[in-house]
Length: 309
Image 1 (cartoon, one colour):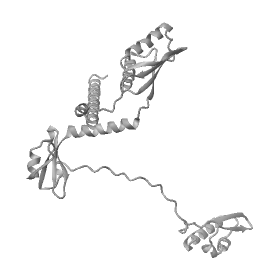
Image 2: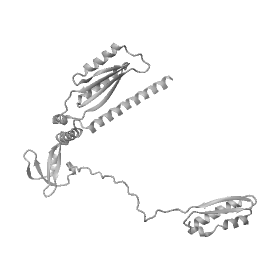
Image 3: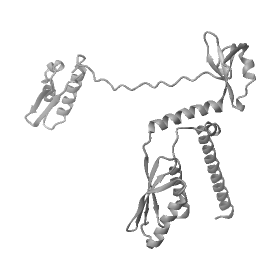
Image 4: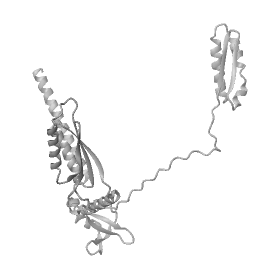
């Protein structure tokens, strides 16, 4: 305990003793001063007993702050692998080189030295082409890249790696229906079930159940509903096990007939819309819908204030 802390503690003890009935200020000062100053350098907790003829005994413990022993090894933090993103080649105006060679992708031949600004002016990013730096040393070389083809090649590689990692193991899923569900809900879940089976390499267990509070359908109607579902999915699936009925429940076991291939259609990937563009369009539609709701709410409030509704 440092001297300042000790003096503060002794002053607090004096204040507490002075307000006790039957204790004079001189007596309280004498009792507080009885605490030895040796407590300043004590390393162990020390207990002092302050007593008076008219006071009850009070136990006071002084605890010295224990610092970490520098000789003890500190616990190591778990190592977090450092993220190392793949460096992207420089494109367009980010290439800060005045003169470059243009690479012909068909013949892999390098053209004469040209001004980079002339090459950039001849290429329009709106048409899906961009100038990309191939190397900077010893001689700077650039090439003209078709963005659609480049993106399609990247997606193709990712899909092949994903399919190879997944192997031939079948994916097991479940789909739940009720006998009395609305047509819109049924169509939504049916479309999701059809999409899962169309991807191939998939088994889906379909469960029909009775909705709470609704009267169950007759057995022949339940059987007809199951048969219609199986026939609607004949193009993409088959029953790998006969369907079962237990009380008001029905279980249908479907297996996809679509064969999964590692071949990827590069032309379809070229025409596919990038994910970030899809998300941007979805956000725009949501904002437009919210604005229309706000305008409709504003018009209704103006109508109410006008007619006193």
